[in-house]
Length: 321
Image (cartoon, rainbow, N blue to C red; front, top):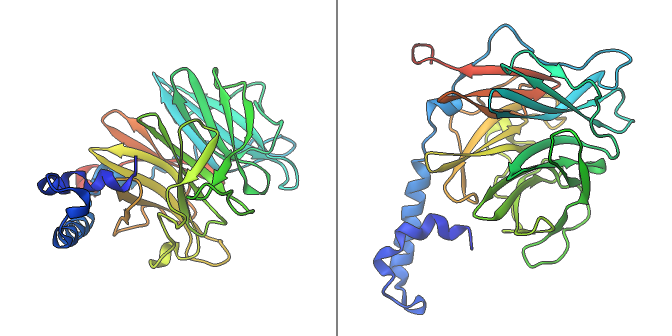
């Protein structure tokens, strides 16, 4: 399935009776204009972009001196299952040492209890991870050494098997050029896996797979680019994809500085996972509150940011917007 057809589906109904090679050029141009109009009216609901930060933060940090997780770093990930919040995070003492995987749980998403036998995985470099559950299996996509993405799996959230680096291909099937392909973020729909990744944070690419083995670019150009906005003109990377009321929303971090000294959390929206529009009022979180992900909180969402420390942000009430 070609992703661009998702957005065009409702627009081509009036000309379905024509054979493909007989479609009037005028209709194609009109359809393209209609697509632009649709993208210009992308909704950004308040419940997805307006959050307030309580003073009782951070809710989780590294364990301090002489601990395997003396420090933590982006990106951690949180899944809520039933009444329990599950968090995976990267801990380290020195960036010269391999980065290991920690696990913690919470009954309320505020007070966290680290797993007593942490780290739960340290057989290979694992950082900047996200987790998606499919049937009874948890799939973790993470950066390995040199920012090369790899996949791990588990059936109990604790014991992980590393399946090695992802086999990445260009749109024509040839191997991706050497270099990093990190901050892997996965969405799964209709038995297809969609992988968003960055290369040196210089853009966000999209690849798909049907077997979790070979990942092929939808196009060889980024689907989300840096800038021209100031807040993300020197780096971008996706942290999470959600689907809400028929639209896809990407939560991504960006930086306005060439030295990457400051990051923010931002939002973009799409109808087809390929064509994205950035929220006009980005960033939604600044001051290195980045690597943001949403977690369901009743009928709304909480926003967690995970850059250096874990902080929680609650939905703004109508009167506080």
